Image 1 (cartoon, each protein chain N blue to C red):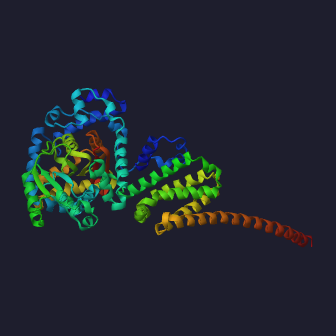
Image 2 (cartoon, each protein chain N blue to C red):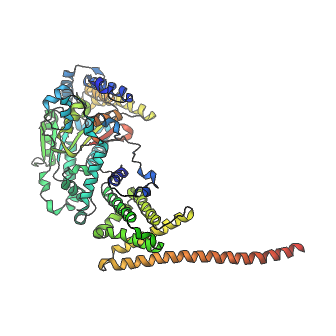
Image 3 (cartoon, chains in turn orange, green):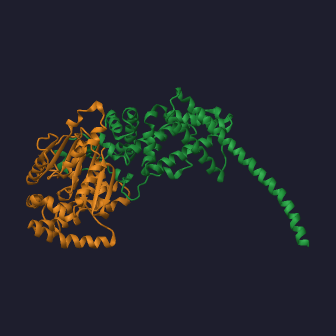
Length: 289
Length: 299
């Protein structure tokens, strides 16, 4: 299948295409640096997240030094939410991104500038939080209650698989996936599902830990990842294995340019990425037209 | 990126000799964001890449992308120039947004309303790099294009003296802003924002260059900069005067403009005469000085 495509194109595209097929296969069968069967990967990832769910937010704060909040803020500001938006946040279990979007839409500043003819649009905003893991969703629902958003009908918690979404075609204005795409078995399926559910003009945004290329910083980051984080996981959450999986899966994920081309292959246009903290985190975005 | 939107608009319009003017600023037409990845045409040549067989059975989407994979062969003509597609859509959204500017200002709300009007999800507004600035810049480019069209179609401009020609063209251009005058201060403040200054400066430079070229200017030395700067000054001051002018059909503004243009041309004559005077004095002084020095040396 890949070879048939290759013969029709310029020769310069041959090596990247063959590489991508093998890269995807290797992502589907890798659990960190370990090799596993495709069918098992989903289960193993599920176990990891069931284990970490209760301490997920705390550990995020520890590992990133609180920076993850800023990263998520940046993601939401890039999204530019608007009242009446139908948004899907995938792998957004504990609700960080969803809460931020809701706050942005409901903010006073936004309300002051609103179009007086469309006042009731605020009510129509729907943010669907989809996660495959019920434990993560529970944590999210509890946090919503704590924030006083328990009765808010804008937030809808849905259990589902990113590779096979239960939403209709062309139904979403926005799609975000924050720190989730690394954990899926088939990246390209997730991307094509994202393309399917988005409306024309809808945007895909992905916030993910990515590759650092800056010379000295890279060594420091590697040291931090492999020596400090699993140890932190052991001390704070009592679970070294899960955090070892985390740092290894970051290394196995495709680098920024490669991932961007995968997004373009799924049909998105205007694919761009922005590196934060020198490449530790990257926000990829694409537009569906 | 934004320049290529303009080019697409420009290329789809059929104006006779209009292309010549824009070629003088070739660097403005490149649309490259160097530090970030952006789609080139290469990834788009695989538009209908067949997915894993499992997918075609699960999703019942009707996008062309799926149906052609079912057909087996990949019809490349379906995605003729996909990179231009999103820019075309963005241009349509901006065009529609202009109709909402009077009500909602040069803002995201106007762009959201424009997107809804065109039938595209308002999320597209997030894809404009500097949102409101994109709308203002689009309007400026649109006005510039209309001015160019007017210059190309209007033969009588050749017959006018330069000051008259400049007056007419500046007036014509400012009249395009008249419908938006109540919200124009907001547009000016957006253009003055540090992030947007470089683009707005370039647009104004192009505008001023265009007008001088139409007025028959052939200068290529320091004079070129002086002329552009002076006209830029005239244009900006008139634009600002227009903001507070409440006379019918902006009569006072046109009077102001006329006076400024006359002042500029008078100033030019004054400077010329001053140089002649200095030369004459210098020549006179020089000969008497020579005689004096000659006498001193002879001693």
